[in-house]
Image: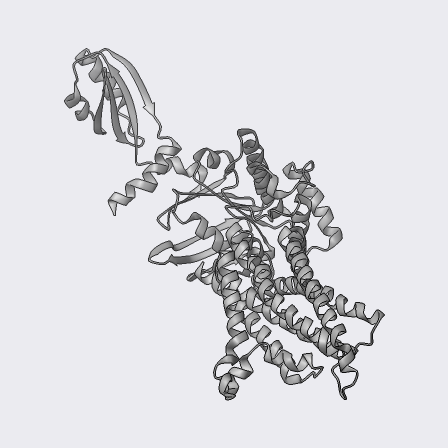
Length: 312
Length: 250
């Protein structure tokens, strides 16, 4: 697949009163990417997405969507976006069919095209049975699905989904994640979430925000490489040889976990395995556990979102 | 695009019990007043017959009825317009409009035309009552049409003001209260100094009902029509600006 830039964001900033909600954020989205926006609550994910969808104007910065500048050619740019806000924008008094028809017409589809598009997205989002129900009476999961269907109606190349799986049961969550992966193959998708498994399950790329800034941008596979150090879990039947363990080459820090267990922090790629075995044999430490501990995505996430706060 | 938005607005109105209640209540009250007016007219009819240039049924029944209908519109329009934007902001459906490839003026005009269509149907229903008199009396059709034009222009002005105030807040009741206050202020603004017969011409010009008086007499002056059109256009312009501002302020 040739890479084609669908969204280009340059130095986007936005203040909310005194707080800098989004601070000089730049990134791009190519066709075929599913970009996960990750961050704690209030990190600026929703604000960024609202600006991308044209609902909120940025204070500073430029957004180009599918070749059209969002400020100079809003109509063209918005035609290329399907947006699902945090709250699915549904009129309670309309049925699912009426709601979808209205949204299709609003995006410039004529009556015949609207009907076709409705049939297509209802099939895709599992809404064929609820067409006549009022959106106000639907469960949260169905409302969310109608919201996603609504974003797909005009077949936009860019999808912006703000927390698409919130409120869904596990089965629905799985279905929606599969749907997003499928959609991402032919489009560019940006989704925000604070759930890590969601990113691992659906995204090709990940972007972590903290306090309005991007602290990590890259492919999902690159994230584990960002970790500064890894650990080795060691179990010994010996009186705490903390000092000796700390003296091993490459060991940065020793953590005593009790019951003869220790965690050795060492630099990435420099595990002191052989030296440790040597010492254990020489000192008669009776080694019974030696496990390399990979930092989980969760730990990396927490490190990236929290620990830098203290560094600043 | 404007038509799509207007159609949804109108549909939303007719799907809510509020609009039907307003239609029912206003029709019931106006019908009651209509009967009283017709009854009064029958009582004085004999004495009028001897007078030269006596006022006819159009002056004694239709004009007063339309005066009351104008009051009814003044009181009921805020309840209809209060939800136009504030409800959409509260429930988040405004995001759908803002992220769709439509301009702020299309959104505003669509909503305006939607609610105006509803108000004009209310005016049309009111017009049916005097039209029923045609069965047994001669009406001055010119005066009747001028009166209807006046009511329609008043409805257009009320709706525009209500639309603007609804875009200012996300609480419908606050919007309704503010609209009622604003409309009443424009209604009584000419009362300042009127007692001495020396009301400032500016205040007199600003007054909403004054421009309707000539229309009720059957006098269609471009000055009065222009006043209502300017009034509506000003508030529509403010609403469009407000919507663009919402994007900036969040």
